[in-house]
Amino acid sequence: MTEVEEVIVKKKITPSLRDRVYYAARDGMAITLFSLLYENKSVAQDLLDEHFIDDNNQKCTPLIIAAKNGHDKVVKTLLSNFNLNVEREGTVKFDKFVVEGASALWVAAGAGNLNVVKVLVKHGANVNHPTRANSTPLRAACFVGRLDIVKYLMNHNADIHIEKGADPNEKAKCGATALHFAAECGHTAIVKEILKYGAEFVKNKNDMTPLTAAAVATKAEVVEYLISLPNITKQEKIEALELLGASFANDKDNYCLQKAYFYLHIAMEMRYSDPNDIIRKPRCPPIPAYENCIECQTLQDLEAIKRNQNALHMESLTIWERILGRLNPEIPNPVIFRGAVFADDARFDRCIELWFHALNLKQLNQVTVTKDLLRFAQVFSQMLHAGVGISFNYVKSVLAAAVTELERNQEKVKNSNPKNYNEDMMEDMENNIYSVLYILVIVTKLMKKNISKLEKFEIHQLLYKLNKLNVTTREGQSLLHLSVNFQTPVDDFHTNHVCKFPCADVARLLMRCGADVNSMDNERNTPLHIIVSYQKPVSDFMTLHSIIIRLIEAGAHMDTVNSSGKTPFDAATTGVASIILQTQSKISLKCMAARVVKNYDLAYQGQVPKSLESFIELHGPGLNQG
Image (cartoon, rainbow, N blue to C red; front, side):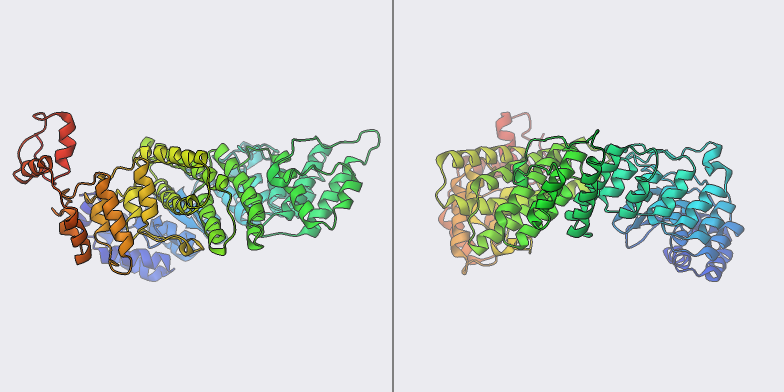
């Protein structure tokens, strides 16, 4: 029994009472809340200290949820009448972000609730209380652009006064300061306010200053203000303007080619503003994905491409990579956007070149590529469905990247512990397994065409490596299980036009490259157990027949028993599957002996050769091994 359950039993806190207290706080019902707590004085403190997990998986106390929803009267009622720990932390969600270790004050600041902030501070809330990611209420207010809250936090309590010792440059775990957040979000007034208190232009972990962050985020007003400051060098001004222009050329939310050219032109003028000290661009090696673009070196060069949209797009991507560097995780975003635009125009060759460059950059920086792998599966499927030729080399390279990603996924899960284990780790790995499966369908279709022996050998090499990883879903299903399972999910954006399961070609390829035909999922089902439950035995007879025959030829045991005590023959859901199994029924003496050992629960561990122990285990779920 958990501590919370013990409190409920000992002090008679019913789930109904707990829910009513939480919902009253959440919905701003101050009088109802007070009445509930007053009528249940003996458990009031426990009710207010308890975390409630809501439908959004937020883990909040009544105080925290009231602070998030801006109910200052509820907050005032709770703090004035009960002895609450105002620093108690919870887990909240803002848009797509999950914030762990958030105090009521941080939540109020992040939600932009000034009145609640005031009540909490007046009741002694620590204005510097950080979240688990080391974000303070001040940073939260900067992020949402609430100058009034920023000023209140900086001026009301002595501990937050920067001129009296607090550090305006204190960083979050990502290395970002409050100035970074304000600049990136385009809050010019807050940027000015923070700078009054002596904030410095420090770099975050991605080597970006607040000026760089503002330029990348297309916050032109902030950039123009910051480059007007005397401590910004001419080189920094030029690069900020170039970065701002390049960002406008390839930003999915703020795309504007006119602004892109405008800021690139200003930057080029600045390079040549002093004839005696011209600041020339460095010449960098051309990047094939950007059409080997060589950056414009003069105003004449730039003016020559003013009306050439593609040239401006490639110029801008080249500028981004030069200024930010290949190791900056922001680099792939505009590359992916530009590739998506090409895909929409059916320029698949250019799309794939750009996306593959982004994929390589992400893997170079150890950034997850889960979405990228699915994106490739989708575009390859779209091309196949439309009858457009696909470079086998690109498909093979994406498959290789997927194998690398699964290796990394597996390592992360393996090295995790209960404290740092994240469900997202397993979800990423599972999504990558499905993407690999889709890519394998595409591989099998391309292999039916004219590919070289070397290409076929390289694919087989990759699949041997993949099978050796033995990756599985949370249900314990291997790639072979999934390839023969009619319930395997298929992404519905183009992929479903090409991929369908069970897929005999993928199953055959996996088996040829070392897949374990007797591997078991969490319910002890082998791939043979899975395929015999296929519900379309007549309309898709050839698939059913082909997979069953191939599995048995590859060594699948027909008498392996699952957790329900069923062999594949017992698990068959149709007469057709049963008949196919019957025609192949050749139970060996070795299998019969193993079944007797399991059926009669005989001890065998340590009494038979090691090689036989796993073999016997296949033939029944009995637990008596020794």
